Length: 299
Ligand SMILES: C[S@@+](CC[C@H](N)C(=O)[O-])C[C@H]1O[C@@H](n2cnc3c(N)ncnc32)[C@H](O)[C@@H]1O
Image (tube, rainbow, N blue to C red; front, side, top):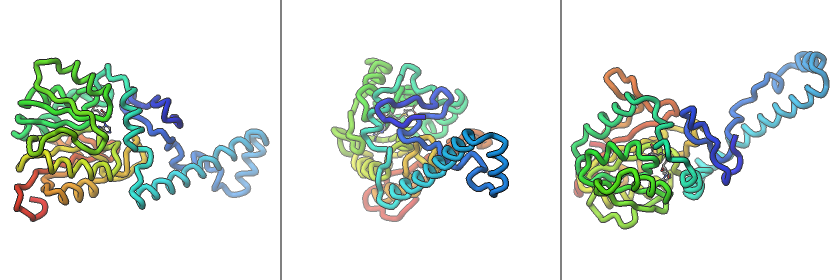
């Protein structure tokens, strides 16, 4: 369990769980019936286990209950005042700058079929992905390679220099690629109306709503009319997988405010809906930039 940001992360990556947050979320609910047990049961536990066990167990259960309540309160404050909580740019940069990218991010790929289906459904299905493609948060490049294989050129945007260096080594000189180090909410140096397709996976799930809204304004600036966005993000808050407070509703309202029409929001795909991002209650939003002058929402 990680409690100290500088030592991040021990995380569940090997188990395919993604990183753990810098503040523990272990205390979802008490794990013992002790706290709410009727008095005779408590007396029975005391008699059967002895006072030392009883004291330790009571303290542990009480601490868990206090932690759960305070975690819920801190989350409520994040949502009420738009605070980033543990999903600040700085924490993200610290975590991802130190991440071991030698596995290419494949620790988060449940199966080859899942990845292939995602690329077919959300990349190859859009002709815009053959043009200039911008990827936010490429990490180890598990999406960058298929994107670059199709695109005319790619623009890779990340907060962590180590990620950009890794991708630069991965792609080599055969690919026309720009590498952009961002402050976590903007696309510095990317010219206006030059991008056909924006893709981002497993990045905005860790980004605070205000930072996402800033990116939405930047997408409106750099994307050509008719250009397409494919963005993976939390659907609603679960408190798991170091997800930020960003929700589908935040994404939808930020994009529509910036002149995008939301074409699709989904959490499953494939011929039988057999693939998904619903394990952490995430979603994928597909949106298209409306030509200037069109003002109606969604469509
Ligand atoms: C969990 S990794 C995912 C990497 C890759 N997209 C994948 O699916 O394997 C998150 C990536 O997003 C980047 N990132 C996090 N916050 C960001 C932000 N505000 N702006 C740009 N990149 C960010 C991290 O540096 C890292 O490359």
